[in-house]
Structures are given as structure tokens and as C-alpha cells.
Image (cartoon, rainbow, N blue to C red; front, side):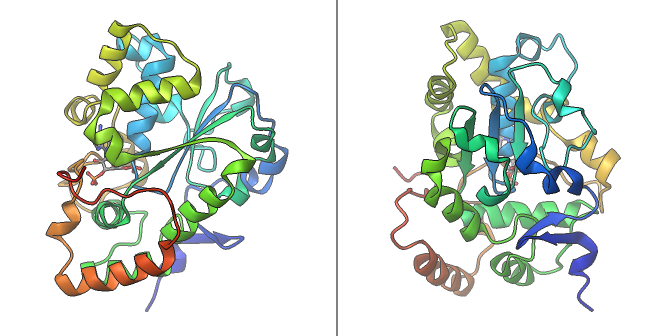
Length: 293
Ligand code: A3P
């Protein structure tokens, strides 16, 4: 029996994680008061959200950079629609950071005055799918999938949190002129983190000295984040979401091209066909391999 509905909550054509979503926030997002200096990190799940949360927390908060304040990234840049720790968003001092997996049409209308900033991080969808497959098999509140083949189907059908990857990225890109938005890829961050941090700083109009940039880059590497409990969600996942096994890690591999270890030739051809059809005329470039220029 298909038990998808146990895990997903559908609203206006978009799937949320059922047990965590705060529908009073989503339902009244239009009226949510956006401040000019708010920053939203927007992603499709498994595209580098936590990484960007860490980078922005490091850029904005000295106490995060030198680890003198014990605040996890999920509370530095809380998820708007999930608000995991029931924060009173109106009481957060400016500048506020938010994270969100929402599609363009469900975010607060105030973002359209183009003052508040949106950082949209995207990742090649084969690696997203692989990351999501492992994550879903680890985290108890997500629908698991015994076979990779079955997960490919769920992903392509949009029967996952975030719905269809294609719709998410295309929707945001097609409506980019409505927002003050910067698109950046996971792969560009991976290949040259320092340049990515500087680009983010320029967009956010944050001038940091060399030394601070060095610290941001150092604290945002995969190895550092994996071992820093402030910067990864292992505790939160285990304590607040539940896990199916003890082998999982929120920071699992952090590479480009892990899809090659999962897709069969036939699965890859099938995926490619759909990708070409859906993404033809889409101008952003995708990097599928760590050695690709
Ligand atoms: P993998 O499962 O491929 O390792 P999100 O935060 O959107 O859920 O994305 C999680 C993915 O981003 C995981 O991918 C995770 O390892 C990767 N990630 C997180 N921090 C990273 C970092 N500093 N460098 C590279 N990848 C990182």
C-alpha cells in the first residue's frame, strides 16, 4: 500500500514534510512582514542548504565565527515554513536570516519589493537525488525507499518533500525578475569556496576583511562542518526527527558526481532524457563531475 500521505502534506501543488510544516505560517505568508534587510536562503532540499546557512551565519555573526556562542545554524537561519523551534520571527533582531524550500509562489509577498535578498542555491539534480535517497532512508519522518529505482520514480514524480525539482528551479528562475535574487550552484561553492563566499558577500553588501573571509572559508569546509555540532544537524535529526539507523550523517559525502556510483547506465539515460526535455532552453549551467570545468 502506498503510504506517501503519511509523510507528505500537499498545499497548492507543493509537498511539505507533514509532521513539521507550520501551516499557520505558510497559510499567512502573504501577510508576513518582510524587512528590507532580511535574507532568505532558498533551496530545493539536499542542494546545500545547511552549507549556506553556515556560510551566512559565519558572515553575519562574530560569535558564530569564533564559536563563542552556542547557537546552531538552524536557529541562526531558521526554516521559514518549518520553524522547527517555534521562534517568534517578529522578535528576531535585524538582519534576520531565513531558510526555505518554498516554491516562488508561496513565499511572502513582501519579498517582491526587491529589497530583501534571496540566495538561491542549486545543485545538479542527480546528486540531489542521491543525497535525498540516503537522507530519506536515514530520517524516520521521511518516506524511505528500499530500492534506488523506486526512489528515482518518487523523485521524478515529485512524491518527495519539495515536489518536483524541475518545477522548483524553473519556477524560481522564470520569476527571478520579481525578486532581488542571486543564483549560485553547490558545485561552484565546492570548486572554489573562497570565490563563492566573496560573491555572496558582494551580493549581501557585507565587506569582510581578509582574515574574516579566511575564517568563514575554513569554518565552512565539509570536514569542519562535519565535526562541528553547531554546523550540522546530526543531533537535531536524531533528537527531533528520529532515525532508522545509526549509520547516517547529515554531512554524508559532500562531493560532486556521487550519482555515478548509484545510477545504472539505463537509469542515467532515462534521467537524461527527462532532464533534456525539461531543461532545454534553461540557461544556468550544471556541473556533473568534479573534474568538469
Ligand atoms: P550529500 O548527501 O551528497 O553528502 P541540504 O543541507 O540542502 O539538506 O544538503 C545536504 C547536502 O549538502 C549533503 O550532500 C551534504 O553533505 C552537503 N553539504 C553540506 N555541507 C557541505 C560542505 N561544507 N561542503 C560540501 N557539501 C556539503
